[in-house]
Image 1 (cartoon, helix red, strand yellow):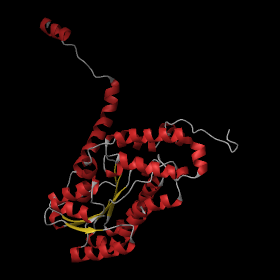
Image 2: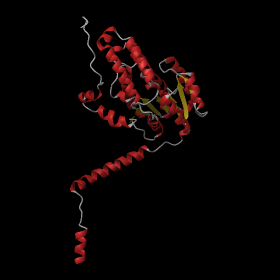
Image 3: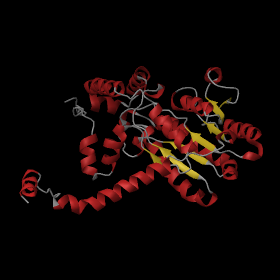
Image 4: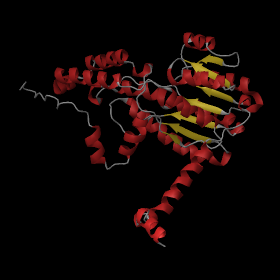
Length: 342
């Protein structure tokens, strides 16, 4: 008995706090749900080598890397490039399975020719995957500096071109009960910069939502990729600054008088700083695109990159006044000039 008493003194019974006991079932349940979700999303399709995938915008950037990734997986990649040079360079870096075509998605007749070419390639198998990746980002500038044609230029590629390609390929995609992957952006949730880019990405989100619900009975899955800023030719500092200078030089006179030269110079430095912080690891985006094509259970939306998951996505759910405070451009108020020059 004395020995037992000593043991109890030395090793007293330790009971977990009641708060831990209360939350333990919930923590276990959440853990099991996350484990199930991970297992479910890790299941990959078989017979990938039998499936055709058509990708737009493969000259550089996301489309170029995705085409090479899928080619290594043994899939039958049909890649469109805007230029002959882009197509030739891609063919040099890939196997003989990958085939290329030159395509401007904003040219409807050009799209018709591409669809005929795709039909000849896939024949009765149908088209398993369509990746609407082609897009442009400039001109981007404060809206007051721009003209209607600046918006039309971006919308005709990023939104209307994507819609045109998708609608014309729907019969082949439905035949294969395949996938449609549309490349959007965090700027399709939060409009930060002026110009047509954010407008086009909001349009991509809306089109994808309606298309996903419409095609669900046919066994077609639609996914949206929402990356933040990544280092690609679309975010090239020199090209973007040239576009901003061009927009400023062609801006209406009232805009130049209202915003002022100082605002223009500060805006250029701000954009240069933001673009210098772009993420160089574009595999974070192409891995999402690949998963959407090859997983048995693809996600509806892919938020590529931690800054997207931890900042942009949460901010998109905040009340508007809070989001405005966090996202408003940290530039000084433009110098207002009155008609009398004061």
